[in-house]
Image (cartoon, rainbow, N blue to C red; front, side, top):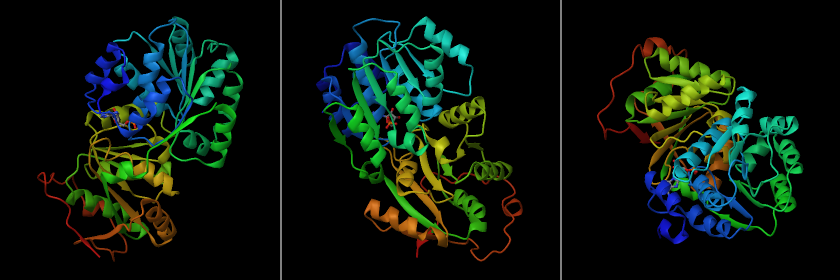
Length: 401
Ligand code: AMP
């Protein structure tokens, strides 16, 4: 099956080709036809499945004819990173269409966004809070809206944005086409779906999609040895880009600093950083100048880097869904990846929950030569400088328990 089957306008096909997409992903195959028919769609798919293009391509196709300079499509995103990334996808896929987009989120000047909106855009990708600010100030006009996308609805709910989303919805005129994408369907999202979608088509991509290209391993370790184990793993592993997840912002920053001090090309990405530093971290990670990004779950939204070879859960995520989302950052479309998770004794219930969702028992590994009995690890003295990169193909010295 190729992209020709969708009969996109040639200017949109040019974008598809420019990005090197050859075959539609399963979510694209299932979601694009009903979206093109104007149906409301529920897309049950997580990031890494190609869901962004699944709604961006039909939106571009729909907006090609018709008025310009007014907002006709609105995509509501939970985080600024995801909003930026969606905007980038629109710009790249729609380069030849002359359609323009804006990312709207807090933490940066509102007047710049207002000016851009005044100059005229057709697609707005917005985080709920800042979008409401614009709606209340009357600096965004949504009376011409034809299509609304609620992206990563479950994450929006997790982050407490559902009341804001409802306020936004109350400002919009009906009828319009509505699409809702979510990796999971908690009850609150189900209720929202019943209220706002009209006779929707549901398309679902199984959880196994990203997992199939990712190999998972657990590393049982005591809490105080995690940083030492992380460094030892990095030393023994042939990696490209590595994404490390911690539970808290403070830990993300501390672990990144420890890695940096040991000579690694690392930085942190967490919600307390000012926007310019978040963007610099993402840009560096994307262009490969930063090899290791230590992030919290919330900051991880929108990290779209194809070369992530390893996701390392320094801390266990707090839900099985969060695990699926984190590991979806590696093994992205057609790539393979490794997911390593450090587990302490308290993590056992979560390990079982993840194993249930993956329908598999995860491999427990120990790292040869690592001192699991150490009492007071001094990472500085153990790892004074960045060790040389192992030759390609030389994989980890790990063995099964
Ligand atoms: P997403 O799930 O939207 O975050 O997309 C994950 C990654 O897959 C992004 O880097 C996209 O550029 C890429 N992608 C989307 N569709 C395709 C496709 N049909 N073929 C190859 N890569 C794709």
